[in-house]
Amino acid sequence: MKKSKNRGEKRNDDSLCTSRVLRGRFSYLYLIMGKRSDFIRRKRDFYPTPVSALEPLIPHLPNSFTYIEPCSGDGALVRALESFEGIAKGGRFRPTLEYASDIHLPWKVTQLEEGSHVHCKHGLCAYKKDVFDIVDVEDNVDFFITNPPWDRNILHPLIIHLSSIRPTWLLFDADWMHTKQAAPYLKYCIKIVSVGRVKWIPDSPHTGKDNCCFYLFESERMVSERKVVDFCGRQA
Ligand SMILES: C[S@@+](CC[C@H](N)C(=O)[O-])C[C@H]1O[C@@H](n2cnc3c(N)ncnc32)[C@H](O)[C@@H]1O
Image 1 (cartoon, helix red, strand yellow):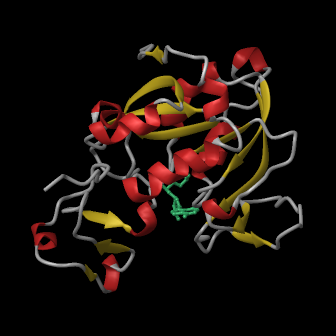
Image 2 (spheres, helix red, strand yellow):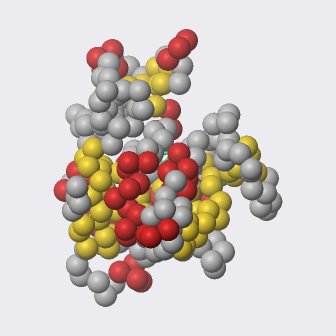
Image 3 (tube, rainbow, N blue to C red):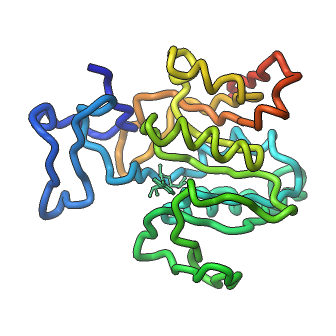
């Protein structure tokens, strides 16, 4: 059985028995038993991205750009990017969020109605939307940037889907690139930025067990001429 990518949470051997929903104070967790899962996993793979995981990506982004966060969760990645605004790149770093969306909006996220472009003064405003329902985007959008679900059944179609629309930066485990299952998707990958281990659970003393990367995927048309993947190792 393949191990799940559990992002550093405690393994529960009960999970070797059966799929079930935990009640009470663990109700936000659920157990799944399957291809990549013998660990407790968070529902919908909800693991917010800390600022430290974004830091290695900043030098690889333009000074100013517009992006969509299509699996935004509670907006941790959006806030992390914003925390570098006016500071990184000699103060010239200006990320503009076109919109954030997620299949499930946590309670602290205000739901936007489709077509409205109201920006919240506090917290995150986002559309409730399945990533696979994003079919086109405004011309001004430069990238998708997200930390997606790592479940390969979602991740692989997500790579193809988003990168066919716009260049797509995705944060997930570094081990993936060495697996056979990655082969059909690596041809869409033009850049890999090493991130290392990420502390997914803020209060935990531990980092996740997986080293991570930001992968940049582009459409088949864009990558057809490119033979070499740009690999950027750790800076510190
Ligand atoms: C690992 S969390 C990351 C949250 C956020 N991107 C961040 O970096 O803090 C993955 C998110 O993907 C969302 N998700 C899962 N399946 C999705 C789908 N089909 N469409 C859109 N979002 C999805 C989950 O609800 C969850 O919020």
